[in-house]
Each structure stands twice: as C-alpha cells, then as structure tokens.
Length: 408
Image (tube, rainbow, N blue to C red):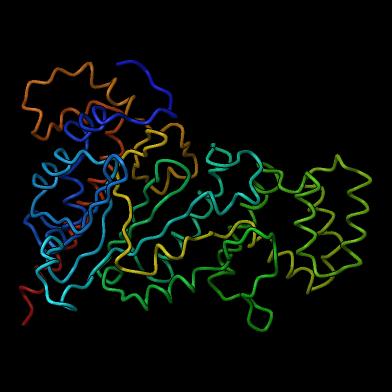
C-alpha cells in the first residue's frame, strides 16, 4: 500500500479494512455498557452513521459489540456518532407512542476546538494545527479536568483527540450521566468564563465585589504560568501591532493606553514579554489595574468551550477511534499526563495503520475481531488507554452491584 498525504480522503476500501481489522468494537462496547452482559446503557443507546454522499442515519441501536461491528461493516460509514441512552431502543422509535421516547442517560461531554482560539494564535491559521498551538488545548484540558474533579468530584474522565484540531471529553460517572438538560446547562454556564467571540478582548464579568470565585482563583495560579509560556513566548501574541492593540483594548485607563501605544510604536522590535513587562510596571501600583491584568490572563488562557455540545442529552458526538475524513487521523483517547507534550501530527493515520498491517498475515475470517491486528500496530497504546478506562468503569459497576445485593 502506497503512502498517502493527510489531505487525501480515505477511500471506502480503506475504511472497510480499518473497521474489519482494527476498530476496537469490544472496547467501545465495554466503555459504554459498563458490564460484560448487555445492559440498557448499550442496548438503548443511539448510534448515528454518516455514509458516503452525506447520507445520515439516526436512531440505530444494537445488543452486542458483534452486532454493531456487523452493521458498521455493512454500511461502511465515513464516521459514526454516539448519542444518549433512551427510554426504549432507538430502533423501535417509530413504534413508540408520542412522548414515550426520551433521552434518560448520557455521558457529560465537552468539546474544545482550536477554532475558538483563531483570534489569538499566531503559528497557524484556518484548519491547520501544530504542536505550538496545541498548547491552547493542553492548557484548557488541565484547567477543565482539575475543575471537574475538584469542584464536582467526577473521576471517570476520558479525553479523546478529535482527529483534527480539537479534543472531546466524555464523563461516565453515574452522577454525570444522570444530569438533566437544565443541570448540564447550569454547569456549562458555571464553567464558561471566556465567551467564544471574535471581536477581541473585553472585560470579563466574573467577579463579585472585585474578587474572583475560589475555583477561578485556583485556576489563575496555573494560568499565570501558562500565559508566560504560551502567550508571551510560544505564540508572541503581542509582538505585532494587531496583537498589542487587542491587549490595549483590555486596559481600562485611556491615558496609560496612549502612553504604552506611543512607546511600542517607537520601538516596534519589543517582544511580547517586554510589552507585558511594560504593562505590569505601569499598572502594579493600582489595585484596579492589577485586576485588569488578571482578567487579561484569564481572557487569553482560560478554556473556551463549545457550550451547545454539553447542554443537551440528545447531542451526538463522534465515537472514539473514528477516522477524521479530512486528515485520515484516528480519534484516539489520551492520558491526561500525555496531553501537554502531545503532537497532533504524531497520531497514526488510517493509511499508516494499513501499511503496518501489510506485514501481518491474516489467517482468520475477515469478519471476526482480530485483536492481534491492532496489537501489532501503532494504534495499540491508544486502545490500551480505552481498555483501562473501560475496565475501571466495569469495576465500579461491579462494586455498585455488590452493594445493592448485600443491602437490606
């Protein structure tokens, strides 16, 4: 199999081979089902398929991993998405009386996309992404992961690279899955500090009596370091005139703004770090201006969430290990520890994986699950992450079952 550029879209033949020999259907089943034997967490779960020609098939459901695999191989979708657990099997939706078919359970999901950082990143533009601008995603992940664990007590978090320029989070804690739409909306509102707007930096409305809430104050301690490394050094966000003008918009002192602008115009070679130092020296004596500096740090580094993804239980989200149709990269799970050093371009593409398969002799029927195939490719470390996460969920479900069986 010849090597392919990322810009080449995977052919139907390539995708079918990927589904037959590499896609970890059993791992996906265990992750969604939380047990070995089928439960409603899987059997009443919606799957939606996108076929060649943008044909979209919703409300599919399955009983087992093998049944899901068989359908995927028959349809050969360009990708498929996972939805909520409904009050009945989604495939029976048309036979249900009105009002009897509703979403009842759903992982709490979040989406962080590089699109929302386009106004401040300097290394790439458009659909491009590199290790440098991945720093925005990495910083956001650290803050959001910490907030969800420490403020809400969630533990079953799975981060998944989107295949192009973002990351998804799936939270499978029982309490998270039972959240109503209203509760999800309230949580997203609490976590949304920076609105995804393109008109530039503006004052944040997050303080009460001039003070930040404790959770945001804790995040700020981390974001100060992220701001220096990412905004001042890696991205040099204030080096250009356009960049420092955005910074000046966030300073609530017109006389100071005029002084700083004059200085920077006369010395265009000053780095972002130098300009930030100018701001700090000029503003450190004024409590209100120091507050503005903190708000600037938050504005540039706090997670920018796609709120609509998280608000509704019936929202569909691309399944882990799908292949991104534009890049050919696989949507792989990531350990929290590896996210900071992660390079999106290091993710195996479907073309690369099939080249790796060329060395593997196939001795079994193509329709069976060939674990030995993915175990011998560069996909293995990522499937190991998923299997460990699924195992932890199954252990938790087992403990809960034992509790209920022994309770009076």
